[in-house]
Length: 300
Image (cartoon, rainbow, N blue to C red; front, side):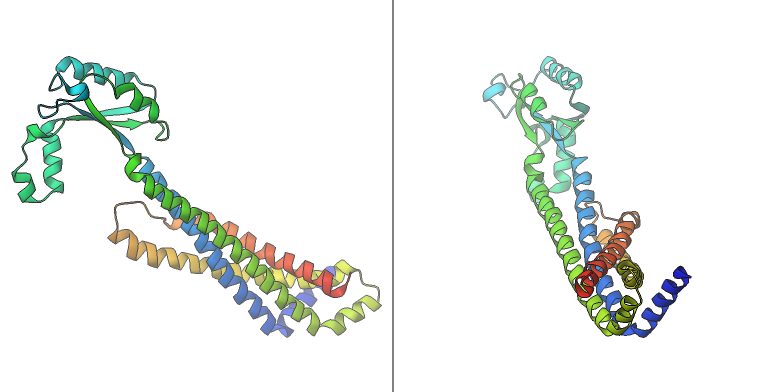
């Protein structure tokens, strides 16, 4: 009987306070959509970081006939120096794989990246052959650099983290900013829902007063309001999650990903990964805001 009564009160409350219920649904949907967008930005930052981290390499450039300073005082790298350098790299525990690029291969890559007038004045023997080193852990690069930097035949060692460092700092900024935006949206949603629930409780103050007079417990009075808020929060969360799907499908799937293929982009699986958090957050903050507001309003 009590369960049937609570259920009937929920249905009655949702029907009588349709405007308030719609206000909660709209408030939650907007807040959850913004919250989900913040999480999506964070997932995008992680995807880009992972994409570029997998491509971080160390380039070991060897001496050629045009370099005669430092370790290159003896001129072009010899076969024995090249073999010793390769053995050092392959035996290093932080090295995953070593790729050799000859002067001819370096010239072909140079020709693809530069304009014809520049390519015409450069010959393959002016470029440096190199070893491109893929690391087990891109963060552990200093040991490899220090191990080969002073070897005979090595002109210099270039770490791509020097180029990608600014990108990683921007990604860190986006990640932190997304977390802050998401937290602000959760707080804003909680306050808006609390205010809406307060108005709903005020409109039904006579009903709650009668229930208290007949001996209903505080929790029994609060329960219909809390469940109403939770249902409205769930509906709003579903709408907010649908909005996040739309953002991913239109903004990322159809506009950004096809036109900017130089990095990784979030997909539907990333959105599905954050949907449970959106639903839980929407229901939780709605129920919590209702519970706290009613305790203060009813002075229980």
